[in-house]
Image (tube, rainbow, N blue to C red; front, side, top):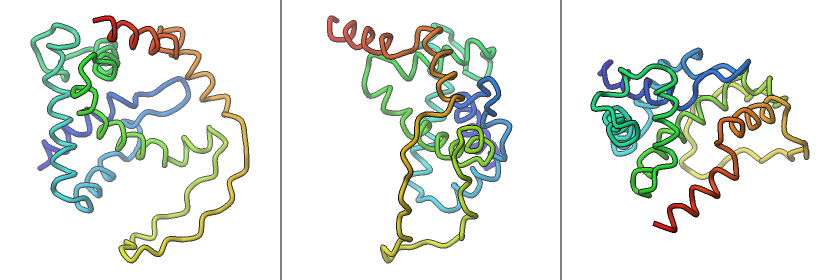
Amino acid sequence: MARVNELVRFALCAYFPREGDLPGLAEMDIDTKIAALRRESTWLFWLGLVGAAFFFQISPVLTLRRPWPAVFLDEEQLDEHAMKLAAYPVYLVRQILVLLKLVGGMFWGQSDEVRARMALPAYPPDPATRRPSGSAPTATLLVERSPGEALVQIGRREEARGRGRDHDRHHALDAEAR
């Protein structure tokens, strides 16, 4: 059980590393969140997440042409592996990873520290209740705002690495030409 959680943890942390002054998932209480997710999710959801994490481990052969698991990659190679998988030309491969990025994004985005750095209010404590009846709290009115400087800086660093909108557009045109 602990090994499966570690497998999921590794893949999630690879997609959400520290970026400048923003913490990565590895610096958060991710083990507790993974354990809670495992308890509270359906077996099919958890199976999909574990399957995606396993695929992430064995796929450096596709992205980096390295015949070993992702756990043996250094930090730079791991970042390149995650990026290449996210932009892989075969749709099914990219789709496998959506669950990892979704769960990692939820964990990262609900962090009080991350939300504070993006000038967002902290979430209230989880009431630890489920609302299967469909009765949800009333939505609060969102105030229009511009993106936080921390997000702008991340975007600029990604563009400097060749990962901006133009990269995505160019990649899509290359895929269509093939």
